[in-house]
Image 1: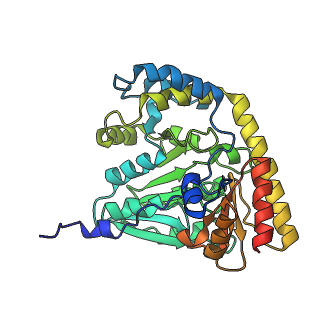
Image 2: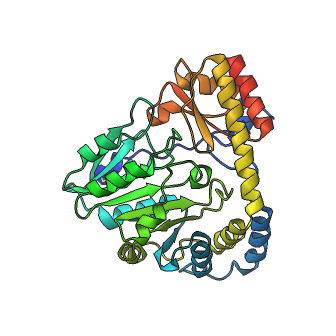
Image 3: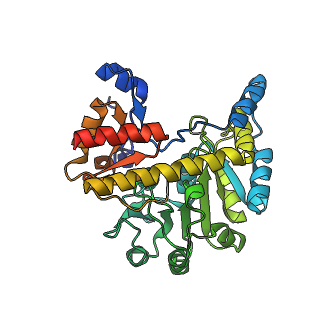
Length: 364
């Protein structure tokens, strides 16, 4: 007898990550490969985080602190907000998934999101068998806040805004977010996904989103240690939320979801301001280098405030990404997130950036 899988689960698409270096080496027989597809920190993790993980490994026989007390206290001091407003997750992906379980309850509920955006937002709605409302980005690949407001209905329970957006890197200013919050129907929550916060925080007009949480507005702010802090491999996400949402979240989440090594690494990484500053400087220089060279080649780029940039390829992006792969450079083809004329390129080290630029000029 065939297994019966829930129909809404079959609407979901398995997440398609960027190819790992080892797989490309095996498939194409290459020895020198650079990966610029997954928005990872090219400098690696903070040495302080590595040291903390080695020390914490001695205690792997015991369960981690289920409440993540020390991590939440460190985040509370760092951001100036009460620890009671903070939740942790096995990456911010888990936090998004739990929020779907908390707020979405079947076909009569809906989640609204700009599109293209992070691929896990639609999955949150589909898993709950709820409506998924995709609102196209504007012609500059920015969130169309007026259109998103128009898409809100009494059925809306979650609204997702990635800020900066992934895959475009574009920003929504504070004034537009404020209008969106004011327009939310009763019972709806705005999820501000700030995975790339550190790269955008100093841009004029970027929201002070934690103030909305402090004020008790219906806003959840998610962030991560995967990007600027270089801890993608250990999975450490966190969020700021009103107390009622924190309570509901803790009722649903898995016990011991954030392992002890991740907790130790996060505390150490948060204190390594030199590593973060170096990361931001390398990113700024690499971004300028790629944008300038693309302009010389006559290939437009989307204005990005993250650690990646979208490049208009002027031909199907999958063809370009496959050709770059044969040159030993892994990038993300835009066809996987409905941008078939763009590739998304992570900003690497200066050497990796030059490797990409050389390969791209050869390919195009």
